[in-house]
Image 1: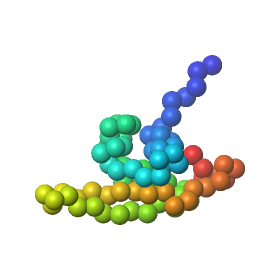
Image 2: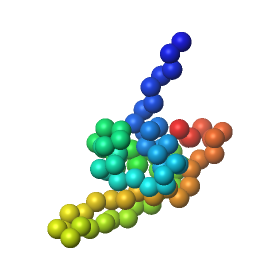
Image 3: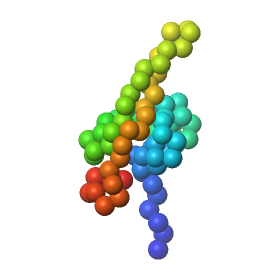
Image 4: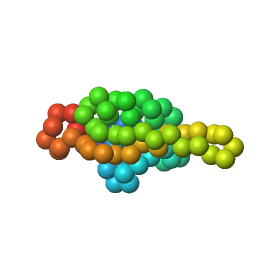
Length: 80
């Protein structure tokens, strides 16, 4: 029996647990996840504590850095 592929939400959640932060560009590069803000919104609804910090480049470009604060315990129904 083959194992079901991980969803992009699960991939981003795993990244946050392992690396503690992620940006849209990193999510695109690693997981082809082009809608990171929606994934973060979904995780927050499921009980994940994630902070958002806006960063600004010298050329005026801005982007969000999402940082893991807390996540649901393994047995919780909202854990990925």
